[in-house]
Image: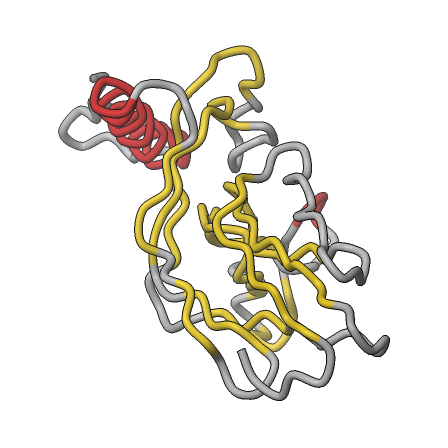
Amino acid sequence: MDRVLVAPGASPQDTDVLNAARNIMIGLGYLGQAALGTSTFVSGLPCTPGTGLSVSIGPGFIWSQETIDANPYGSLAADINDPLMKMGINWQGSTTLNTPAPTTPGTSIAYLVEASFEEIDANPLTPYFNAANTSQAFSGPVLNGLPLNTVRQQVVGLQIKASSPASSPVTPTPDVGWTGLYVVTVPYEATGV
């Protein structure tokens, strides 16, 4: 695994910090690939009945074959040519997904709970200011004073996909890039899962 070197007395550059983080991600990705292979792997994310007609998906993670960086990472260029196993983690709280009952008597709806790896640039801040007037943004993308994202999150995307109402509903197939986790069948006039 590569490590960034900074000489004594040198001023570290933003690329030193970014390359260190990218190198750690690459090392963990190859470790994950050695342990799990290159197929999508999901752990945790328990599905429990929520309040009323909903389910709650708890903490967990997903490993997925992606590329090193689909978008530029700070001042580092995107790397869409090199595959890498990446891990998305949902570790705080749970996610609620609604499962409304069908409105036609004698029918049910099969809901497919599915997950995907998602990489999201978030937490925008305007980190540079005019020293003479700290309420004035001094920089930002293209020196326009707009906020910059300060974290690239790797999380589990969750969504629910409904079948057509039927007496024997057919479970939907997972969307491209998504992995099916659970099927929740809700009959007509149900008030809870």
